[in-house]
Length: 142
Image (cartoon, rainbow, N blue to C red):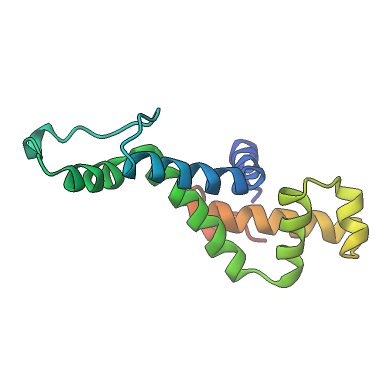
């Protein structure tokens, strides 16, 4: 069974944005720790009562930021998938998604055939989608 097109596109979007997302995670964490205003979604802590300790407030904001959690989860999922795949997959990730080279250049730099390039790409995207919980492992492997 094929990976649904919307899932494939979403995962590729996350792969292309990998470095930027890591940078944004760091910036958001610094914004919270330095108490700078940031455009982040923070879960309400009204049920926990008011926290007067500034350090505890920062820790609470770090732990309850949904945006920060989602971005960190996606980075972790990509890292887990890359650790499970072979060197060719990692090379493809670096050349295609980090360096944004055209597929013909990626194919010639590794070097692999057209068919192998598309298989490796599909496997990489599929493994990341599995790690993100978007698809089941059995549903896309042939």
